[in-house]
Image 1: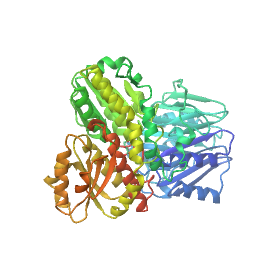
Image 2: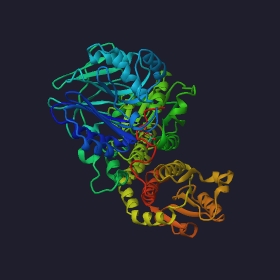
Image 3: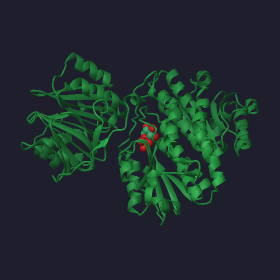
Image 4: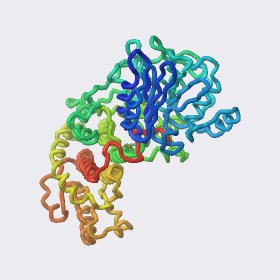
Length: 607
Ligand code: G6P
């Protein structure tokens, strides 16, 4: 949610910031802005994509080697130039950009108005800019620390001041912020993708920390000005991972990256000789995990769907009672955490506000917490007791694809890790691990159907209402298929258990309505066939995801997407692939921006 990038060094800041903003655009794209400090403060803002800001600064270039830029996902105030960041005060020439939300902005605004400050926007951010200005007494770092002591909410901010041309101050609480250390220069950003082209030496700020940067040095402190020493680490990211290469969209690129990504997820984690899963990130908690009395899985969006599959896997394979819940519900529901509860937080970004809050709530109540997270060093990854990284590489497309299969893969590994240490025999575990290791090759085969999937999508993509139906392990995949279609193609789609249609949704079926059935060979295959017939009888058009070699399905379905033969428990890793491709083609055919769907942002750091 909102992307920020800031620079202090000796290079012209404008082009560097624009390049950084483009990398961060997946975080928000309703407006963008930039402030550069030279002899005075220059600000340019524009409604729309970063390209609009680029045009605006091209008309009126900003010279200077200190500056910052922002791409916005609106929370307070409509999408307009006056609400775009940076916000500034005129008294001291202070400019501020912000990712997050300030909860107590209303009383602070009244207080500042009484002090004579005039506001030009409807944002909570401008209140913070004015507060810094109000408290400014010749030292920007001190003013920022003082202002943040008055703030409730979440923030990653960058602040510059006309009166201190050699200073950049940044701070964070709840929203991510990474500082990249270069040679007499620093690049600060919401994530590593805006930094990696300049340096791979980075550190994260912790909550309630402020960092003052000059060209030669930096100083990190708490809000009470107690110095802290950050942990400097290597940013593990390659430039090519965040570039499109030969693909038209990041979503398509990431769908096709899945085989390689999952090979990396599994690397070093399967001990074939011992028929066991090895999870380094579980460390000394292995015993507590194996003895868990209850496992709660939580997440939002696509991660929630992966968590649902995790619940099925854990109960089915490891025989530990498991449940899944939206993090946004769990955190406010007064949930019961019995002794021996393990909470698994599933998240691509590791920054989703609700998931982070659910994790903290569970921890407070005595649960052991574990993360299934992609972004290394993210808040969830740092706050959990144990964790298993997805290792699928940066995911840029707003619609999550490779992170989903990465999450399901990690949850499969955790389930087998537990199962083998509880009731599963070495032989049974070996069989599943062998199959798991073939999943990347099988996804490659599923991807080879891409042209056929595109042709089928062309037939149906003008329909405005779709159903996605599955049973057992593939019920969450039906939900995920529907989510993928609706979020990028704006088609109304509902996912549900196939048996549930009789209880209402079947009333929606009219002539030609597409219903996507996940009908792989599994224990519920015959039941799915029954449900297909119920839809066909009412004029629905059936698209089925089926197992290679299944000729019978052709008698029932209008169109078929085949996947290789795989056991039911691991089938979601394959059945989701044609649905990802279908959604991607549908969005493209309908003329939408696949990577930047309207109203959405990739990393949701607000409630
Ligand atoms: C947003 C994204 C989804 C993602 C969800 C949870 O809604 O658009 O793709 O699944 O947040 O994000 P997380 O980073 O926690 O997996």
